[in-house]
Amino acid sequence: MTTLEANRLSSLVGEIYDAAVNPAQRNTALEQVAGFVGGSAVTILSRDAARLSIEIHQHYGTDLRFRELYRDRYVELDPLLDRHLRLAVEQTIGVADVMPYSDFVTTSFYREWVEPQGAVDLASVTLERSSARTTILQVMRGRSRGAVDDSMRERMRLIAPHIQRSRVMGRQIRARSHTVADLAEVLDRLSTAICLFDGEGRVVHANAACRQMLADGGLIAIVGDRIVARNTQADKIFRSLFDVVADDGTHSTDRRKIELMTSADGQHYLAHVFPLTHERALQRDGAATALFLQKASMVPQLATAAIAAAFRLTPSELRVLMAIVELGGVPDIAEKLGIAETTVKTHLGRLFEKTGAGRQADLVKIAAGFAAPFALPAGSDDAV
Figure 1: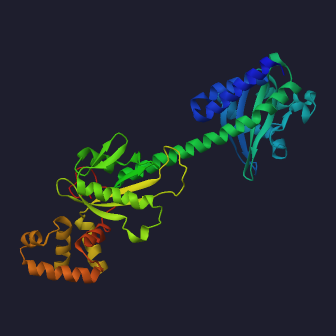
Figure 2: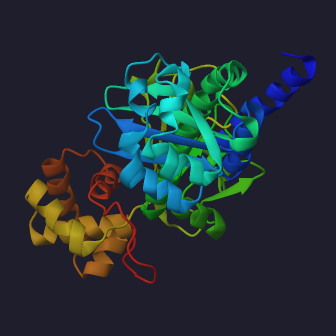
């Protein structure tokens, strides 16, 4: 191979891998493959191990009518296709490797499918084989280039591994993209505000609820690529949570990772921070820590019955618990419910006994665990 041809091969390999990242470049890459190996048309197809079906993945230079004819009628007459069920990966063969060329031109496959496309020969190479199917690269040879020769076989052998690796890369990229997109969609449906941080505390991703909380600005705000709390009390708790994570579990048994935070307008939120990985070396955009923020309120139709059933609460005890979540202070609760403060304290004692909680903040955390996880339709007043 001359220096010019080697440079051409190098450029083609680049085109092949570019197509893995950008599917819009696949046709261009196949056109370059055809030019490099001396073909007039290129097809990547696979056949299942039971020989019941084929699938055409990519193509260049063939009309739809001929692709359909091949799939529906002529696939069984292709002298090369089934040979690849037994050949080694990257092994290239032409018609002359499996039958006399003079016999080939008398077949209906040649006369009715190959020749009408302006071709005189074809070669193929195995790209991949599994227990389920075999994938091949099929290249037709135009009339002007003559029959398949050793140069064509060698060039197909050289590019075959790159085409296959590009296909694997493309599948992985698409799978990752779908996974990330699907995960982002699920996170956006959650009513809990979720924010992911990298190893240096920079925001990697925030779901819709977190973005709305940042926009409201009552509890947290974003400065540059970092989140900060809007008041001293919240900031102290916020930083303490991240300190627990930074301990890498060394002292986590002595400190809580869930805290109750209060916004500038007096709203209560549960904050929960935990590590996603213990790896020290992370890429800049790798998520290392997750923050969950949830407003300490309930969806009554969904949560109250479950809470009452779980802890065997009386209607009065449940009303006091809901008031604790919304208001917090005994005097405020008594005023809202129209009962004496001593009655509120009596119900509080029973709530502590039944739930195992030791303080009102713990009751709020317990109740929040029964909140509906998914956001309600926009415009609902009951969204958590």
